[in-house]
Length: 402
Image 1 (cartoon, one colour):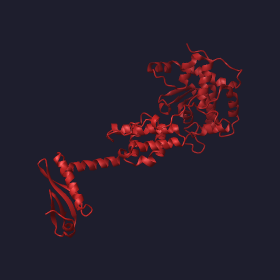
Image 2 (cartoon, one colour):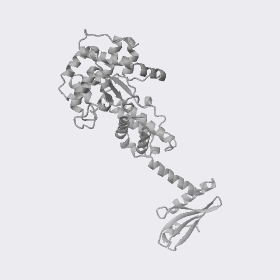
Image 3 (cartoon, helix red, strand yellow):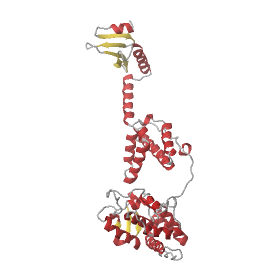
Image 4 (cartoon, rainbow, N blue to C red):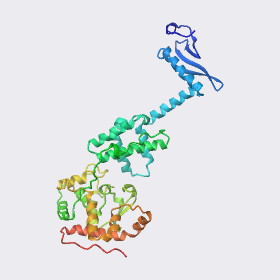
């Protein structure tokens, strides 16, 4: 006879107590009560555990047995299906967004510099991990990612919001490719459809007529001397702020008047050779007395093993009266504007001096091999031009090398 709730509550005899259709409750001598389903699949007799009584009641046990029988009828072994489901659950639980993001970032080891990877990890750590980091990727909905990205945008970091969205999508794409996820639910998260449109603004930069005043203020700067020297090298070399902040003495070949910035410190991932003017060499000679015993040319005043912070240059410029007027990165625009306006034929030389990447690989290789002599002359002209400090003392740009 089928089992009843009343009978189950009063069972005392150890053994198998059948309900019908292969379902039974096994009562052990120790008092354990286990639901089992006896079934045959592919000619073999099997047992399927369905839970422990009374946590799993009679109705629940029958429902589980019915579901298992349907699998058997469809040709599926319910025990194998259960094991596969458990394996999937364990897989999903192990593949949290944070753990997969860490593996994704490690996979980029030869593509990005150490600093770039660090910045990417910090943005995810600050903006995504707190809410989604420990969640299995498979369970995260596009709407949840959209909400986190829009929160970043709402605090005024629109550039950051777009970058974070791009990185989240890249992690999901990588996870699918490498078997960590079956499908990518983030494909339809298009930045233009979830983030507000914004105007493209160029970094604030000095103009040619601002040079005399700026150079005078830089000479009179009362803050940290290393910061002033770093700003001076920055404007003399037309490099990026991060390239100067992270400059190491080992990169400088002073006898050759050459600064070789390795590929892993360059935005475009390509080694950049910067000719050093007499004025730039003088800055480095001055810094030898300050940081010659350090690996870094411009170490942080607080931690000599670390470079100047990202905000150092613009904070110094704000102290000099240039807040909301010019940024340190804007020196590159100033260099480009002045040199191009004085000689329109120097465009290729200026672009190479700025380490802008030419999309034509053949042409790029040619420019790398032919323009160094022109850039040596250009960078000395630029340093001399800055030294004049007054607009009437304009000197002609050097002639292109034959």
